[in-house]
Length: 170
Image (cartoon, rainbow, N blue to C red; front, side):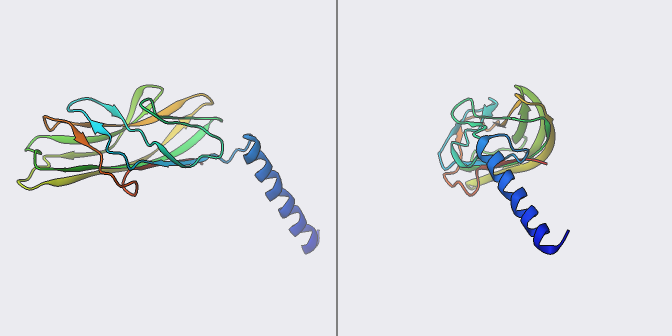
């Protein structure tokens, strides 16, 4: 095969992959969502993060709202990266925690991040972020949840640069 034929074959493969992505049959699955909303996170209640602004999701696998989730189109390993930033508060006291967690089909899978004994006299932001690799079959869904125990509700900081999730089939 000469160079011209190799380039033509590579171009045809790129076009075929583009067509598979557009038709929803691609093995390449990627999605990203974020939020700039001041979502309220109740005290001592595991809360699903509503990453309500979809940055990209070519296969429309993300469902937004209170029941936010990503649903796998194909079986495989998925890399999940998530981040949130809780608004400043001076209510953190010794022994209180913030937790960011990954759930699959409603069941707890892994702790992405945890901050313990996060206290101070001045208002402090708490950043929680982490990643994991998870195996999903077609139809499985995942979501990201947060749990905080300051004794009162906290809100997410209103900056989407700190509140996001990315998912990619690897």
